[in-house]
Amino acid sequence: MKVAFFDTKPYDKPSFEEFGEKQGIKYKFFETKLNIDTADLAKGYDGVCVFVNDTVNKEVIDKLCQNNIKFIALRCAGFNNVDIKHAYGKIKVFRVPAYSPYAVAEHAMAMLLTSIRRIHKAYIRTKDFNFSLNGLTGFDLHGKTVGIVGTGKIGSVFADICNGFGMNVIAYDKYPNEKVNAKYVSLEQLFGQSDIISLHCPLTEETEYLINKRSIERLKKGVVIINTSRGALIDAEALLEGIKSRKIGAACLDVYEEESDLFFEDNSGHILEDDTLARLITMPNVIVTSHQAFLTSEALYSIAETTTKNIASFMNNEKCENEICHKCQG
Ligand code: NAI
Image (tube, rainbow, N blue to C red; front, side):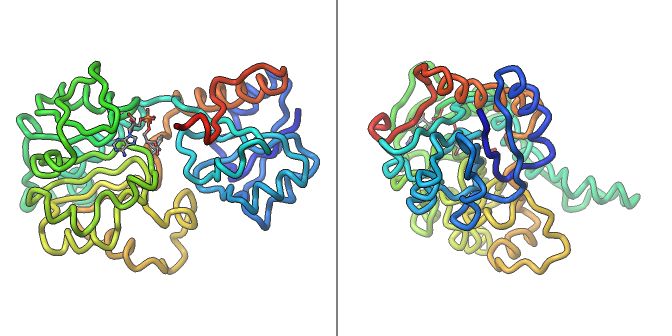
């Protein structure tokens, strides 16, 4: 079994080579992303392995099918970059539904603490022997209300972490889960009551621009917004306006709507074309990490293991529990 692996980074290879060898799967690592211009690279392979910023739209799926590719193995949980409806009946699609919800939830908390305790500022100051505390006043998390949107695998771990900090945890989910340590409220109530809002729902037509000009008006003044889910849950222009008007107290962004051409790459020698992102990054109360929340060694090994098992089950004609199809999504 030969698999064309797109958008390869150095940290992907060791775990995929190790698990691939165990299952008799040979990965060919391409640094380029999958899109209509690169889809022909997959010719002669049995399947492709892709990540969050590869383009798997109708055109690409048709091209992969023409090239006799039998499956698309996503090495991530979210699949908003794949036209699942178009893929149905043509090509199999697998994903990794869970690898380490702790990695992402802990990163969300790391960003929150960094932001509100000004660790990012203190780090730079003390490197320069500047030991002044002026401007570094933070606030306690204890007793604050955190609103979690989406209480699936990651959101529920984040709820546990917040409970550990003595926070008042409220949540909104389309499908509430009584096992989650949070009080479910309506989205409207969550917007109105939260000192901190953390987004952990998938990107769908329904959740696109969940944080927009109108919803920002309904938030508490000084609210901190954390997004480790998908960039387009937030209208970045509206977020920027909310920050400039002092309505939003801070933003912690691990994802960004237009991240695909920027994140995961070293653009330090280039002029950033995206004015909204550039302006957000200049704000003292905005922290941006480049889709890093998943990046722990535990998560990388778990991703490689599950992806390889998904491919192996296809190879062995077994039913794969991680197959996705639009008819299965309800
Ligand atoms: P999950 O599927 O376990 O949980 C998602 C939750 O959102 C479910 O409880 C679902 O009922 C809820 N939901 C669905 N539609 C909703 C709506 N309209 N409003 C409110 N809630 C809704 O997913 P998981 O594993 O917790 O991941 C959450 C998201 O985190 C993923 O969709 C993915 O986009 C993102 N992610 C980001 C990573 C990163 O490195 N930054 C890594 C892994 C995932």
